[in-house]
Length: 261
Ligand SMILES: NC(=O)c1ccc[n+]([C@@H]2O[C@H](COP(=O)([O-])OP(=O)(O)OC[C@H]3O[C@@H](n4cnc5c(N)ncnc54)[C@H](O)[C@@H]3O)[C@@H](O)[C@H]2O)c1
Image (cartoon, rainbow, N blue to C red; front, side, top):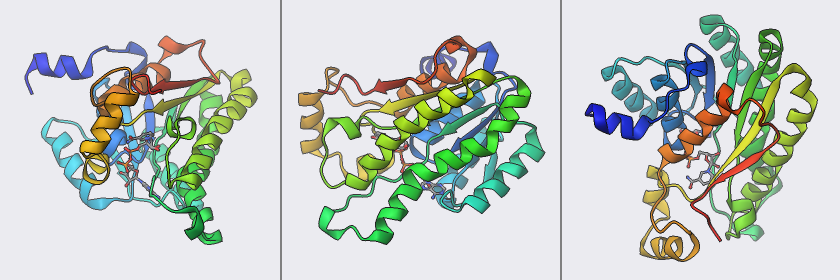
């Protein structure tokens, strides 16, 4: 990548992110991959958790070719004990965690009539529960550090109207409640908690599964901005909420959706 192209992609530099210890969940592909890239470019010390081995290894190879070596933990985020152990190893490697980006999720489609009790629990586990337990696992680090920033990734979808994702939408509504509850309880420790809600973002998974001609037409109809939105555009907003530049912002949810109506 040329210097000009790099600046166009990475944009602002936040001095407060240099050397900060950052944990990103679901950082092996999609929006999470872009979030990891952006923190690495800021000079942060970055760790991520992801259980998809193939895309993660290829991502790590690309980063290594650029001289970056973030710490990867291969763990299933729906397994709370495994998550706690992974976070313990990250802390041992890097020290206390100061920034957490709760990004991982899975928006698998399902008809309401096909949802079983087990499937419901599984959807809440993959889309909401780990956000709570990852936060719980790092709060003490942040308290001891005198503060921290948690960015929970929600979704425009819970408010926008989409079919066949009811359990996912319930979980994503919960992310807003989680954000507000943690912000209220931990503001006294200078821990800020915000939610970034992406719109329809052109990840590999979205492009392969859902964005066809019809999808593009819907984008043109419903987005104020008449163009596809890219993962890096979410990552840039996450950096702002993670950095000290947003020092008075907490308990907020910010849409990055191109103005979806
Ligand atoms: N792409 C969009 O259009 C869009 C829209 C709104 C919100 N979002 C939100 O943005 C975030 C990222 O979405 P994305 O589109 O990049 O998703 P993605 O499916 O492309 O990537 C998710 C990553 O999380 C990892 N992951 C999922 N379950 C895991 C588990 N149990 N254990 C460990 N890792 C796990 C996956 O392996 C993958 O690398 C999610 O919170 C999603 O809800 C995305």
